[in-house]
Image (cartoon, rainbow, N blue to C red; front, side, top):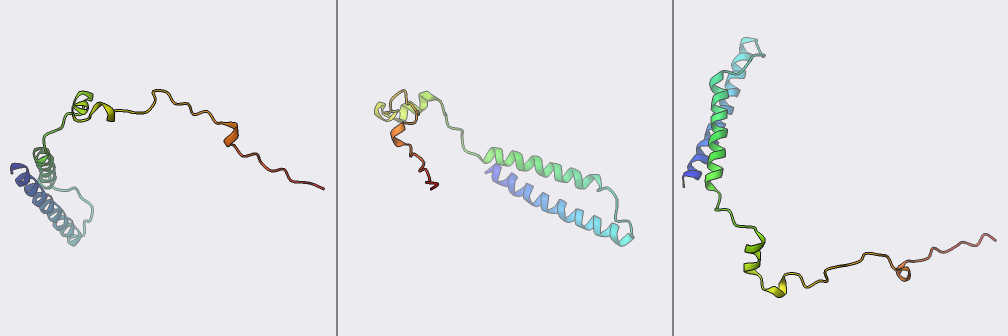
Length: 106
């Protein structure tokens, strides 16, 4: 529940930072000074929203599952592990290859 609240808060904080950036840049454009740095409060709000979003996404995830060989063998019977041979050759066989046809030049 806390993760969802943090994600929603981060979403609205990012929206507010974007809107504040748009307002600031339009104000600078109206003054005839299109270049200029963003105020520190907008930058801080964006970084705080990033931190809240990261924390919210971390808290919202499920518990991690164990992915070891031992846990995999608990769920599978012995016959399903690997019924193939332990060694397979990948050598080409001459009988499977096609012989290119030669053209008669007569």
